[in-house]
Length: 315
Image 1 (cartoon, rainbow, N blue to C red):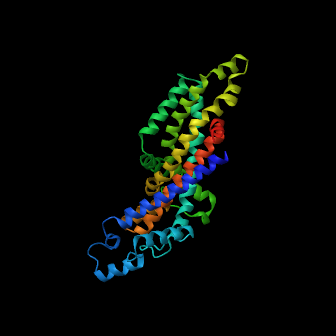
Image 2: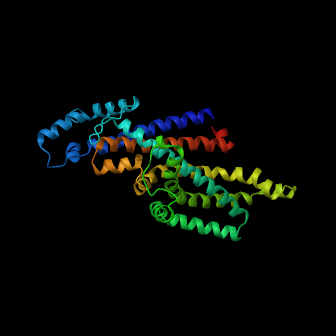
Image 3: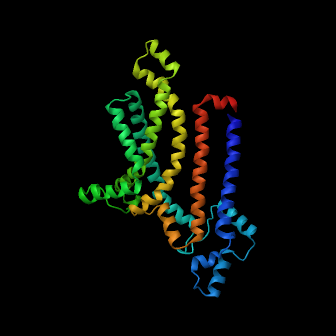
């Protein structure tokens, strides 16, 4: 197990370095003047020269890359040209919205998908199974931003149960903040819950047909105990892999959902930075999103090994 963790950790570090290098090359080294992109082609030459000096663009590419990575390791993400403040401060403020939103969406998605998938498999071809399949098909077909718009029309505008958008801040209290995040979290969770439900159903059906499950039933173990002790633990192995892959979609999907609900999160910051051509912020946010995906995949690999003893024995 220790060898597996070390090998995955080395792979994580190598991948992070490769991703950071790719982001740097695309935004700062490939043909094109980053300063002209940020200020526009109509900017004066002395203004462009001042910005190039401020961004360190007059330094060699290797020096700029090492300075950027060194700053990242020390928590220095640079200075935003648009907001005139440290990017680390911007990211910290916006992460206080995006992280709870994503975690809440993950909890909602998992809490919906696992019971529905197991229940559908346990009652195959029955009314419950058909209803779950309809839910999963609708969830896959409808994008999360459209679900968010429907939620705003129905729950916020018509019923008035939730705010239509915005975020009051955690200083306003946990309940107002939770109310502001609930609809976006459900809109973010439903499409991924639909996918995870189908995967859970398929994995559970495959395990139900296994020989060891039939043996347990032949020995007199009742249906519920068989599901709890034998079927669900084994079905969770492939489900864990899909869930890990989905975690990155929760952070990526937050970009659209945060803009629909006007939430001041990391996704909305990325959208605003892109509109304002703030390459300093864009570069850091892209690396943060990429790093989150890489770290999540690392944790999924470790979790997969914990659930599947065969991987531990190979390691």
